[in-house]
Amino acid sequence: MNKRMTICDTCEGPGRAFAEDMRAVLSDWDVRLHTCFSVCSKPIGLSIQADDKATYLFSGLGRADVDDLVAFTALYDAAPDGWITDVRPAGRVRFCLTGRVPA
Image 1 (cartoon, rainbow, N blue to C red):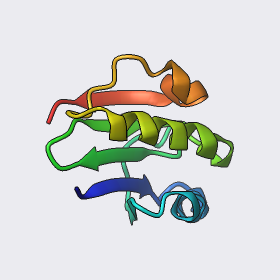
Image 2 (image 1 turned 60 degrees about the horizontal axis):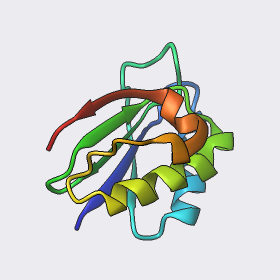
Image 3 (image 1 turned 60 degrees about the vertical axis):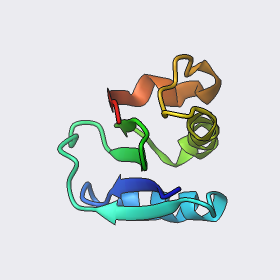
């Protein structure tokens, strides 16, 4: 399954360092950078997608959220359709969720 994490690299560049942090801990994910997620008021923006799974959009993330985001990816991996009903195990990241789109 193709799992993608795409991180906004526009807002003063913190997305690049965040992407490196995520690549270091998520070896089975394709961590990419993309220009402008239109969440400029709450950088860093990030999306999580996989084939035939729901898509998630987050904003307001920072390098301190790496562990919580890893916890979210574990929940995502365990959900057959990507639809996570209880995001509490993902800590602060659950408050950064901007949108969820079904597959």
